[in-house]
Length: 431
Image (cartoon, rainbow, N blue to C red; front, side, top):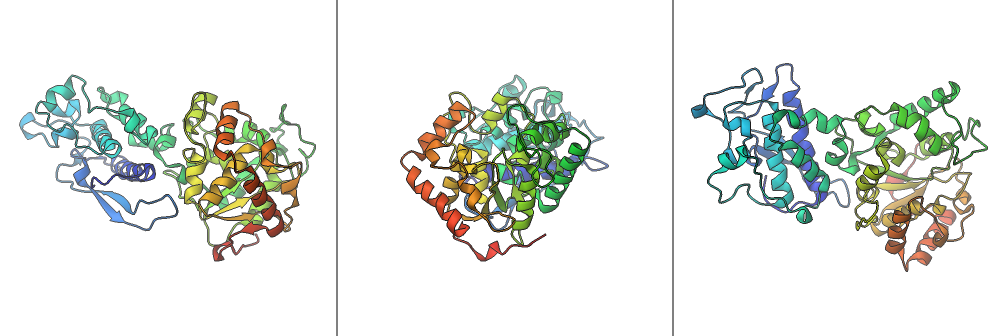
């Protein structure tokens, strides 16, 4: 890999590619240890970018297997040690190699990605420093991908059994720190499966009314329970103990975004699914849907940190949050109205339409019969929009300050025109 400064998306994209490659090697019937994993042994294959913000033009490929061996061979004489000392784990210096040794080497590659420097440059006693627990210096302020920094520190633990496996990084809680938010997506078939899962749960009496969000249409088969109730009683209960989102449970390593949907949790789930299916653009495969993209079982503070918020956060919700990063790479944003209320009484939806406009995205209203008036139900101005988290509300209001009239006009344009800057990609299919 070259030393050009990559964006946060590039860093996650490259790291994910390496993990997928190494997970394949370690997951073979006869697992392969690379034993010389380093940046010079990662080839970059050119590919097309997906959209605004996805500037990475390369897919990483693991190369040079001259030092590789099957996992059954874990010890070699010290004088025959394979590997490059800047990337070698403590146990590797003692002639013992395991899958965890490759994981340690990956941590050093992450360090290179994050800090754009040569590991251990100018250090002559690397072996001694590594074996007594020293690691390359970490400047948290310089790291623009804190999730990767967290993974890096886990991967270079001194004890091999304290390091995560590559499988852990794809199927455990670390997945949301490794896989870029642009990849936390579902497919059209997934949406059908999700709706069937919800209907079955409701038939079995497993979705009670949400105590804080009562819904007169809870039993209506065309509207159904609110997203609040569905997340509480279906999404959370279907997630594994590993804490990976509904979307990433179904797509190991994720799937890159095509459609970003913006909606309101007070809507009925069946109404949402019907409108999305009716308006899904032809030729597009995936959708970012927050209820299924985010790991809903995480503790509030941990989830807030992942989403770029929480007490004392200085991140910009219109730039740093997962929704903003996903939307920056989307081909189109679909606005999903509902019969309960305007989605623009929800401040996060206001933020989403602002980001879509700033990125020059095509915006379309997803409706079953073409009506867009529900976007104005109980809506007067984005100045009255609310957010359940006071810290998030303060950050979003600061980000849109002085632009409220402009956003109000955009919302009214959506109602009158059904979308803005429509492109050929928006030809819809009815299913």
